[in-house]
Image 1 (cartoon, rainbow, N blue to C red):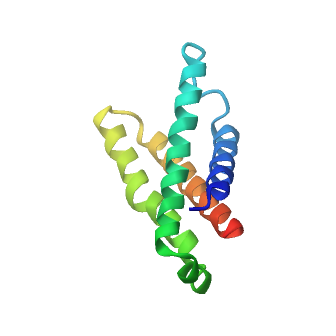
Image 2: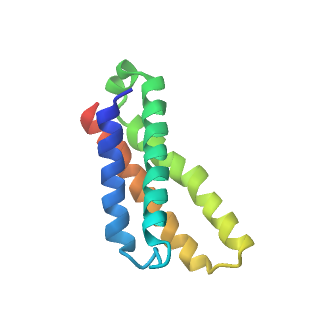
Length: 120
């Protein structure tokens, strides 16, 4: 597994998160712990994505580079996004917020996939 790519993918997605959400998503109360938890969970996502690409194998990914956006974007489109909608619906959160978060996660996952592709 390419751990350098994992860290770069994590960093790119974290920067996107800061750009997209800024500080508004993390209240002042408990903010440091929430930031640390979010960072750790995002690192877990990047590590699992790295594991996924490692299992596919370098030869396959070199021959079929479209697998990077297909697989990373597919995770966001088919798993992360639907989970957001289910969670938001159960908590009666606005569906517009779910769409915004869905969009962010698709972009973040695609950016992570691009980092793995670039560092192949």
